[in-house]
Image (cartoon, rainbow, N blue to C red; front, side):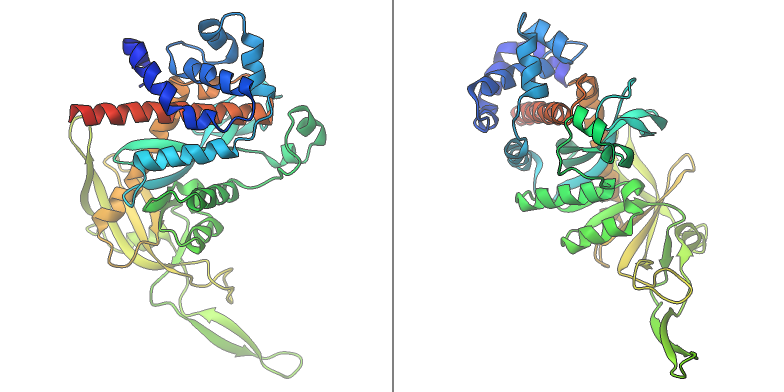
Length: 406
């Protein structure tokens, strides 16, 4: 995507100067308005490494310190720029057919001193590694993703270590929050900004968390999320009943129990038999239509009120969706889409999640999301925001070119 920028430098430079103006207007100092476009051009223009020194060498020889100061130590709040980014993203890909995709992406690090770095799961490598983890929100429609939020997950040992916090200038109001809570707060910010989308998508890392699902429901949002095969659900017919048992006071003690036991998602699907799944195609790939086998049935979540014998009784009615891929891999999902939603609609939504991974990869490979060499909280979030702004501009160019070609 960014590699084509050198083909017609004058054209994209002119378009860039106009497109970036609303972001520049939010900077409080003249110096920041000067260096922001330089940094953004450094991210967009060709070049193997997108850290400060090589970008300065290509964009502003002799001014490395000023460029470094702008991104790493200059004090500018990202909030207003993030609002502009949300407006740009909504104009580009927002609408009732859009998806808001929750995920996280890891930035692999060799040292131990960058803010939030720890040995944790790294999706890029498919295993535990020394890295920083960013909670990510991406707005996407028609296979065009625009990342709109990147927030560093601060592991609990980091959050509680005052010396490391001071060294990396972590703001005092930042406390430990699990990833699902960071994600819910970011979703609320996007909703409050008036961005329009049809549903929220997330993988099992978030979907297994009942608080995350319920938080989305409480915001009035539709969602389709991955879950574990071990996630328990109740049959639709399950109800709660009141039972009385003797007590030492002589007055019967009343408790609540479910009329049936919850079962694992995998067991529920297995009980439907081998012919319950059928082939559904969702989009055209590079060679042919992409398809897999799916089935969906209505169940009740196992996250309701406490009951005898189980931590929770039956909760809301949802879809339990099973996906069996051509290689034999089986995935499970839950969705609060209404009971009359066609299977094709559920499949189209849950398979739209892949575009956020595409965006993460492009931001790393072409815009240097993981090239930042500073250690501070502020510097990392400045760099992440500027990377998203650069990505949004490239998507603006892509959409403009697609319209012209049509």
